Amino acid sequence: MIQKFLSLEWKQFFRSSYWQKSVAINILMVFLALYFILVFLALGFGMYPILKKQFPESDPLLIVNGFLFYWFLGDLLMRFFLQKLPVMNIKPLLVLPIKRSKILHYVLGKSAISFFNFLPLFAIIPFGIILISEEYNTTIVLIWILLMLIFTLAINFLNFIIENKSAETELSFLPIIAIASGLFALNYFDVISFSTLLSNAVNAIISNSILIVIPAAFLIVLYYINYLILKPKLYVDGSLKSKEQVATTSNLDWTKKFGDIAPFLQLDLKLIWRNKRPRSTVFIVVIGLLYGLIFYPNPIYQNMPAMFVFVGIFVTGIFMINFGQFIPAWDSGYYKLLMSQNIKYKQYLDSKFSLMIMSAILMFILSIPYVYFGWKILVIHFAAMIYNIGVNSHVLLFGGAFNRKKINLTQRAVFNYQGTGAVQWLIGFPLLFFPILFFYFPYKFIGFEAGVATLIILGVIGIVFHQKFMNAITKKYLKSKYKMISAFDQNN
Image (cartoon, rainbow, N blue to C red; front, side):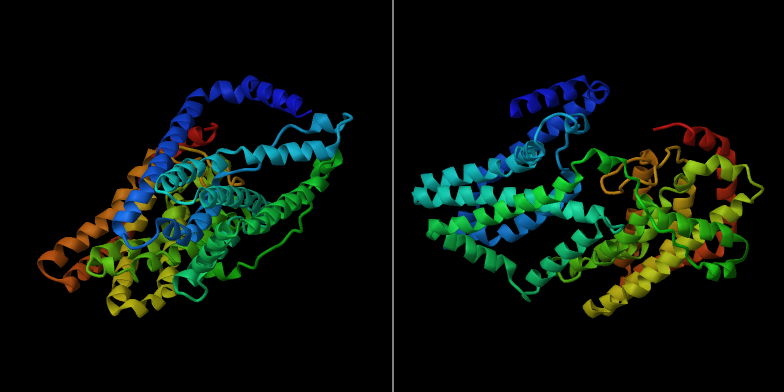
């Protein structure tokens, strides 16, 4: 039966129109796979001599075991965003005399031969070979390799459980990001040393091989949980049942205080909250807000205030950048209808601008606790907020006049490049790197205060001449209006 399943999968893969239309993409994926294989091979063969050179008094195997927590955490996050549960077209099989258990075991077993499970072996096995050549106990090394394989498969099935649960909620990837960040923070600040606990557990297992039954039993439990999750979904009528949702409404009366732009502002807020793709711009705010924790506690960056400007622009402008770079593509699904209405285009753009500046102010307020790392950081964040409001907001709106790619609002945002073109890549330079230059030169030749003052002055100039900038940007949009209507009518 497994042989028949494999035959069906093989025929489906090579006979599909997707394969024929995406040969170039498949070739690119092969080259990427080869690249990562070479990287992991280099890591596997080079890990022992590098660790021995850097830590001559320590055991390289024990050092590697001490970093397994970070390896597993990163592996889980990578799998969550990139790996999907292998599927097959099972509907025709459900009406045939085939046991559902065989179909389920095939689907789950197919996930065990995923590229994500093979990739770590290109580092694990060479490292094990080097250990054996360095006269390590062969049994201990083989147990360690087997244990790493068990952990890899366990992460594989744990990821599918997490994906199933996250798919049932509107929060998508937010829970896994929050949990991973929490575990990392607890370990980093030594509240609970997960790296030490995991290292001690691995050392105990390789010292006493009988203990390997514990992680093996854990792997079996995860496999069985996946089996139980998939089993109720393996019915024909399960795919026929329509999804039931409870309609909800939000009170947006407070937006009426913004005058003529209130209707557009309400449309933007409803669009963000009701659709998966734009809703991610809100959830990613959490990630952006914590971005400073990577740089501010690190002593390497303490004498690099220009890097703090980059972080300040990113933290206070995370929503502005993620939302603004796709204006007006967010409305591409009904852009033709919107343009047929008797509305002023400037009011439409003013609503986008208002939403972006409100986000910048809110992000600055939420980032105030970073003053714990020094008053200069708070000052830089304030200057970055003013610069984002006065300069970057106008840059984003002007760049939007060149957007020509439609966006599907219902698709997941993570690693989704739909709607992304040359405009989004080119606009990143003036958004993130120009403020660093504007700060660095006055800072280098005059002082810190001069660099901060330059950013604030540029932001204030943008605010003062806002109406003139908006009039010029509106003319550009009106000039490109029919080109955008035509482009949004087409599928990318």
